[in-house]
Image 1 (cartoon, helix red, strand yellow):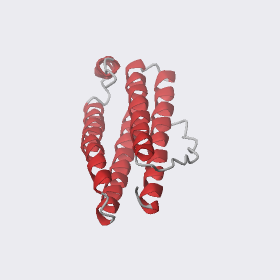
Image 2: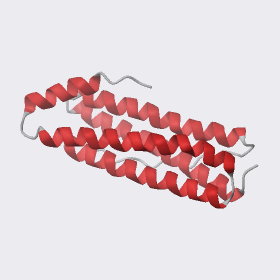
Image 3: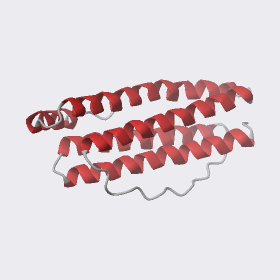
Length: 164
């Protein structure tokens, strides 16, 4: 059984992961509207991944005998700016998620909750990949500024992303 403090923190992380999914879905809606179906597809796959992350924590809490309490998910904004602005926001958001995961891990260490420490290792590794992907796409977009044909090639490339 985990401590109440750990349980509360994991429930907060579930809400953050599901909120992330909702954010990426909103970004995908804007990109769809801007006729960038590859970028939109990338966001929809990201939505699925974030939902899976939330469910991975949900199931973990249940497996440990804890009670999942779902929090309200805030309504995301509807206008995120240019594709470069969107991926700046994605990178910033992923850094926020990384910091949250690190705080969870620090709490698990303090609580001597070895099972949660082990479970969070996957999330720590995943966040390295999340930040790397967002930063890589942002750099590509920035390098292509003013070159519409290259943006269309990147759009096609992002449209080929497979769900994990």
